[in-house]
Image (cartoon, rainbow, N blue to C red; front, side):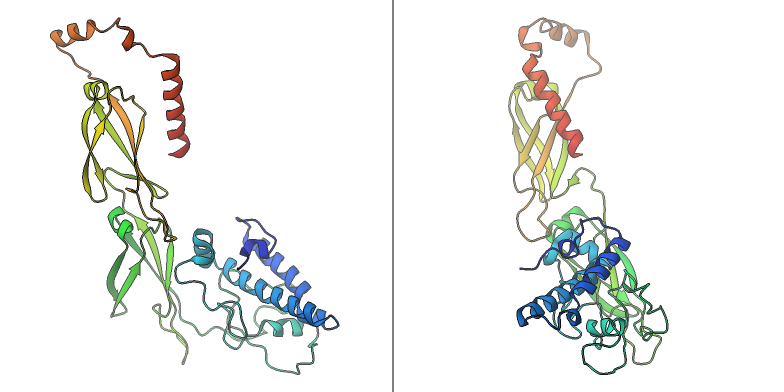
Length: 338
């Protein structure tokens, strides 16, 4: 089972890009296999595994887009993180001819008995820059320029109904008709990458960039999103709250009728299980939370006033300490969650 990438680098979630770079540099020097040449076979193997694990963690966390997906979904992010974790060319953002051992052989004076060879790279995982800055390798005299084309970025707006079921959007990119499949449960600000659908490379033989799809939610007229739950504010007539009766609420599948119990208080939270949004991780579903608000009429006729006057001093019309405490607890819950 893969370890958490932040744990691999000895960091906490939310660490800065500079902290990630420093942690990787320090630990990669520690676990470089050349430093373990005199160790036992078991220790050599452990060092190599740590070294590859560090390269994989840095590849993801140094790239803003990959990191956002990892923070959202962990190792189970839709599309994964490339073929990380094994052999030359198996480190995601690293170039196919790049071996992470080479940069260390250069740092340690070409040790390890591997002979001389040219050192080439395309980039170090994208967003984090060269993690070996400050070790004398410089920025431009060591390696070649990436031949990959620039990324293209688009924003796709989705309704809650589309988010609930997942959707495939179609469009044209550089004259090419493409389909963009989006899974159920996506969130505002989430990004997806379609490899090779970006701008063409300006270099002969270079690969096109990627298409970066950013998700934007279209606000719903009645339902509010809270993680995978949906929230609806139900305004009830005073008479329905007091006497009970039917009420209608919106759901992702249309209108639903519910039964209001007699004596329902303003601030009560009613829950419709499973009527929220699906989990983006592929398990479970949120609920529809109905926040009850009781409407008190603002204008009364003389007859209506007299009718209510008859109830003014009735014991049942006076809130008890328990009811007051219960109501305040519900209001506090709403403030904390919304």
